[in-house]
Length: 120
Length: 108
Image (tube, rainbow over all chains, first blue to last red; front, side, top):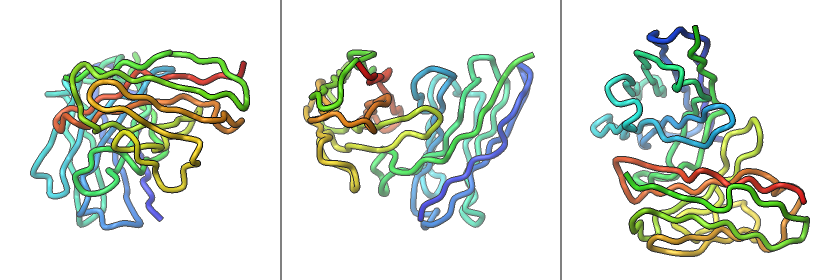
């Protein structure tokens, strides 16, 4: 069974930093691109970032480019999101999501999410 | 970036109703569209991919259609478990994925 478990969320002041992690199990992690998708309270879904299976291709939404960094460790079956220069508008539940099959770019598996709150 | 516009934003319906949700893309995305269902406090669930392919395990009352810029998600006979928010997502643009704003299906 595919499992994605996010951690690392919490309360942080504007301008601060936070690192999210996603622990993956139940599939060959190194074979799939991985993604972060967020959802602000009461709002819709927003794709944040993607990383290819070997980390060769990395993409970001314009709203986080230059502030967030996605990375992965295939040996540890883990995905990360380093978030710097956080703003109030970054407050959201952050989901780790796996594509359905290599290169498909839609999300078949999701974690339960971790809440990031940016507030003074 | 490709913009995705869903309508309506809220829909009131009764059990047994046929429900249709529309998603429009700002440019052609061929059939590279997925639909998700999300319930409060839960992660989204994949329903449809490639515009009309039903994800394994999803009830057959859900169907998707369309290509190019206009797409629909249809629930043929609304069930109590279907009251939720639905999102479309384009994946034609490899570098920038985008979701629609969502359609909340409420009990009438």
